[in-house]
Image (tube, rainbow, N blue to C red; front, side, top):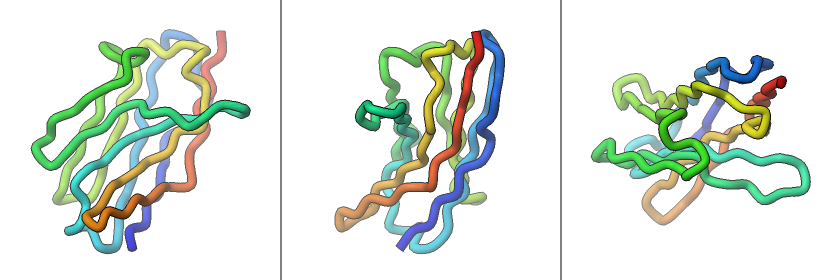
Length: 116
């Protein structure tokens, strides 16, 4: 099992920045991919960014150039730096990891609200 706890959400004005953090614990040696997803009511959860063991990252088109995903194995942390935030970025953001098995784990989510 892997446990994930997100922090860093909140209310920010359009054009502002936030950094989300995800702390991982448990069977960390089995993880090979870390990601951030987001979800708004009535819509499916969507991938925002993902990073793998080689620190190769990929992003959804709607955040390219604005968001950056990073991780540090020694601290068991993954971050999502969000800049130039837009009202349409308002959502609950979830930390996600994929482990060998395969197994998938989710955090509880953190609310990000961008005001216009």
